[in-house]
Image (cartoon, rainbow, N blue to C red; front, side, top):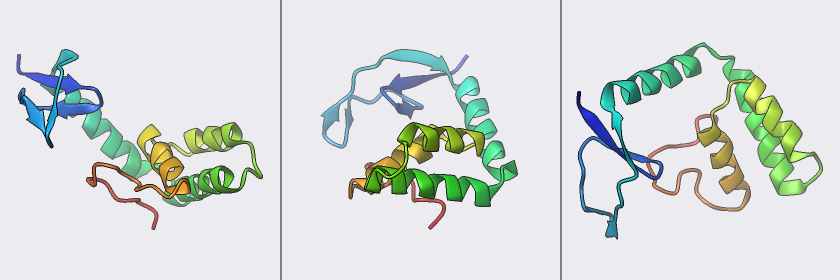
Length: 112
């Protein structure tokens, strides 16, 4: 069984001691096949969900964070019902605080 290394939220296919100048501490080993199946299922979900509904839900969530005019929890529930991922919801939360969607610079906001 090939194992992936899980470091916080970063999944590595091999253990490395330094990542962007930071020492990494291995949390647990995970079956790499299971990781790939999860990644594939998220990609499939994003293909079949209603993209317009997901985009509107994320825009409402961002507006709620920025203005405080709506209950954030209600907007998060709408995002879940639209099959938005937790990463997407976290990204718009950061954007509402004038931070990058993805602090690692890997992902871009999918509904721009």
